[in-house]
Each structure stands twice: as structure tokens, then as C-alpha cells.
Length: 204
Image 1 (cartoon, helix red, strand yellow):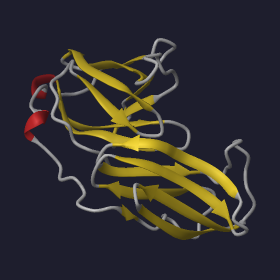
Image 2 (cartoon, rainbow, N blue to C red):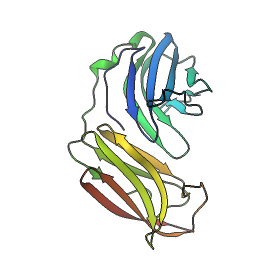
Image 3 (cartoon, one colour):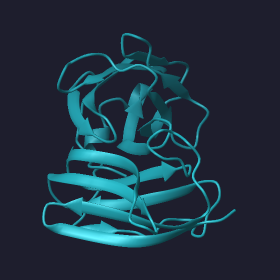
Image 4 (cartoon, rainbow, N blue to C red):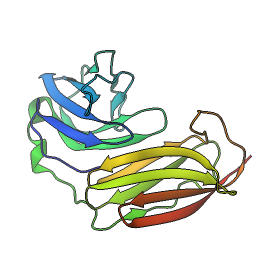
């Protein structure tokens, strides 16, 4: 889950997850949702990013221009999720579609009050586990995994993130997208002066 920002359809917002980018959302008709995702620094479009409505079959993927379109959505309020291969993040709660468009700014979620790293779930795991953490203010966040010998395995994120509750799905691969051996691994998060380490167990 992430920071809730009141929006009207068509308004751009800046968000940070595994990528940093601009997310533009607008309702093109009563039942369509379209938008664009581009890199916040270079302004280059990002392709292959999936956008979907939680607990539904409605989804879309950005093309080479960073554009996406989700069609024939029934009127209602939806949670919008953006994600890639190893991560996902909820970027809007109660986003109004159709006759409810523009009403989502009346519904807000509470932001975290302190830094927190939750134990991955499931743990032990195979082949995938979910990692969740909370950031109470804008911070430079580094989230990474090391093996039992202290060797670096994978970095999920290294950059600035706004306040919010985030989750990352890990499929037990390293930075080269190679499967790793079963065993004990350590998850470390650093945000400003705060740091926490948790033990994870990958089963055969």
C-alpha cells in the first residue's frame, strides 16, 4: 500500500516504487481508464509496466510510448496497482470510475507514523514471498538481500520514496534474474538513519 494522494481524473502525480516515474490517469469514457507512465528523471516512457484493478480481471500494460488502456470497466471504486516482475505497489485507493469519477478525493488512507519492516510472508518460502515495509516520511530507501556469508544477492530498491506502505514480491532470484539455492538469507532495509535486518528461509 502507498501514500494516498487526492486526484481528479487527468491530473499527473509523482510516485516512487521500484521505478521512479510519473503516473498520469484519466477516465476517457465512463468505462475506460487510460494513462501514461514515464521516467521521472529522463521523462522517457516506460514500457511493460502492468496496471490492474485489485480483485478484478481488469488490467493493462504500457506500450513502447508508456501508454495503457483498460476498457469496459463497470462504474465503481477501485484500488489501482502498478507492478513489474518482482514488485507491486498500490498507488490509488477508492479511485472512482464512471459515475463515481472525481469522488475518490473524499476517501483517504492514514499514512504510517514510524519506520517498520514486516517479516516476509510466507516464511519459510518457496518459490515466492512478499516483503512489506512502512516509510513515514520522504527518505532514501535501500532494500536488499544477503546470503548467510554476507554476500550481496539482490537489490529491490535504492532511491527516494515518499511516505507509504510498500510491498515487494520476491521469486528467489538474484540481480541477474538467476534462481538462488535454498538456505538462510537476510533482508536489510535502510532509510535515513534507520536500519533493520530480518532472516528469511528459502526451502528446497
